Length: 154
Image (cartoon, rainbow, N blue to C red; front, side):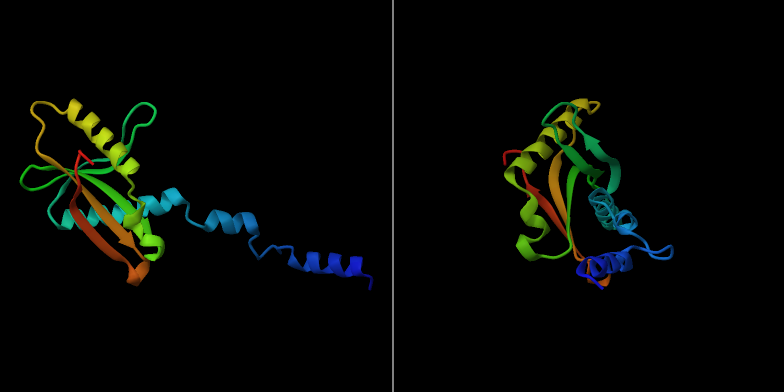
């Protein structure tokens, strides 16, 4: 068998069969970044609701360029409006989920919160910016709720 025939034979052996998913099927089966983010938000939402917070809005976007998105807008039992940023990472390497909340990200969250408060009927309530970190997966998953993690002044 020549080297070309050997190469063709090897390539043919690697071609997926009818019962074996090909690369596109494998990629399609993997959760997207958005799906992972949505799942982390659901975990965070359930955690905060168990702590007594009530959901006001989810994935609240600011119109216009450079605006931010609020993952969760919740209300605490004392009436405080809580703007929640949810961050998820599979592991705590590279600083973990918390390390990804930069000053720029905080500024976008504050901008989005100001937009919500401008639309608020009547006098806006007291508010704070919380962060929920979701690290790990399955039985190894850890949830950390940082109340008043940052403020509007940066």
